[in-house]
Amino acid sequence: MMFFVLAGGYGRRAEPLSLLKPKPAFPLGGVPLIARLIAQLRLQGCAGGFVNLHHLAGQVAAAAGDGVRFFTEEELSGSRVLARALPFVEDELLAVNGDTYLEPPLAEMARLAQAAEADGVLLARRDGSGAYARLLCEGGRFLGTAPAPGAGAEPGLMYAGAALFKRRALAQVDEINFFDSLRRHRLHFRVAVYDGIWLDMGTPAGYFQANWDYMARRGPQAENALSPGARIDPRARVRRSILWEGAHAGAGAEIDSCILAGGPALENVRHQRSIVSPLGVFPLP
Image (cartoon, rainbow, N blue to C red):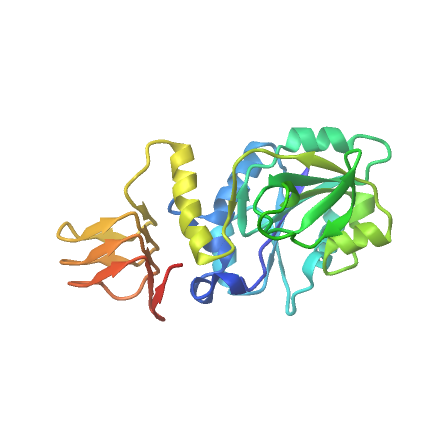
């Protein structure tokens, strides 16, 4: 099985952070999200993969590292970019969103895809928030999608950000949103329900919380999440904050529940629940 991390989007909902760094390169526990995604896919046996590039392309490529093939897009084409992998795919391709951390159950997805009539498998998760579009299913088969029902709705299934395509299905992904291609071509996609770790990095607040959820899952939680090269002066007081590479909490700084996205050293300042960046200081909702 090969993988394709969709990593070219602008990440508008994550501004101002995404103006400085593309979401796939956001540090998660101090390591770029896309690097963590690719590492765990390789641990599960994926032979190789692809990444599409557009917004802040150089940062995404550097974070993804070696061993993948990059497709640079002058204009974003949505799901249609998946077809560029066709010449290299013999049987199956796993498409993964590059702004969400999850650990797809590849063995279960591959098992469901073995059915003779199956064109692929969608990974779904239970959503009680009502904030995400719903997957419509019957008998474990994908039928379509419905708009997000809103808060207070009964729990339903949402797309978890990973889909396994048989090669014959991949060749028919010709819409910006591949769900439209599945419906129009009447492709038979099974649905696998996933209950594992799932961290949405879509907004600054979601990204902030994702770090603590990830770190808590990995073991005793550090007080802060530091990227390589981030520094905290012994005379600074920093609590429950995320420091990107180049961030420096200097002497006299009091930082609580913030994202420090690089820039000059912070000395004798106080910030709480804020994004502190070269672009300015913004509230962290």
